[in-house]
Amino acid sequence: MAIDVTRAQQELQPQEDLSAYAGQWVALRDGLVVAAAPNPAALRENPEVHADDELVPVPEPGAEYFL
Amino acid sequence: MAPLVAFELDYLTEFGSGGARRPYLWLQVTGPEGNSLPIRGLIDTGADRSSLPAEYAALLRLDPSDVAIETGQQVSGTFSVWTWPTTLQAFVIGQPEYAFEIHPTFTPGSLTCLWGRSDFLRLWNFVLDEGNQRLYLSSKVEA
Image (cartoon, rainbow over the protein chains, first blue to last red):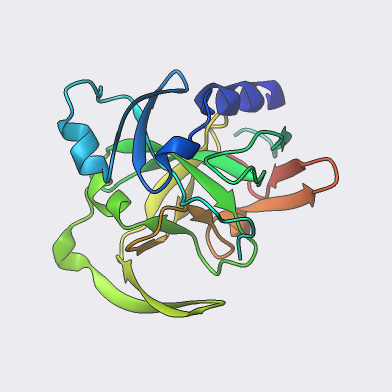
């Protein structure tokens, strides 16, 4: 059961560096970026984005310390 | 009825920018109309309750007419948060039989999801091994 959790969580992990998209939302499919936009509504309007893609906010750069 | 469960995950890979490695966890969160999203959040023992970027309110189809504006506080001062009376259904992705409710705030301008104490951590025991960058979760209730 623990293996299932690990595998399921890892399958959703981004497979590429998202730093280029900091401050935006990205649509991920199989861990890869399909599209980026300032908000998820704009992503949903993008025909390249599928309904089952994960929409993920990417935190701003420069946050060496998160408090 | 499924028994209590425990599992561990590493957080050896960074997410986003800055190279920081933090204890993120994917939850599947379902809104009141049944639409469901995978959301990656940071387990945060300093957060009184879970918190999501405000855009998730629309993605989860929360009724805008039910929103309340409240005040949150962080180290740098206060800020406005949106709250709803509605709780959301959630489970740890990979562990769907252990469903629970979360009652997050929604923060305009935020890009960070937090799993906080009064909802998520009330139902899951959490141990952090920062030296080895591993987290341990065990359920407090049977499925």
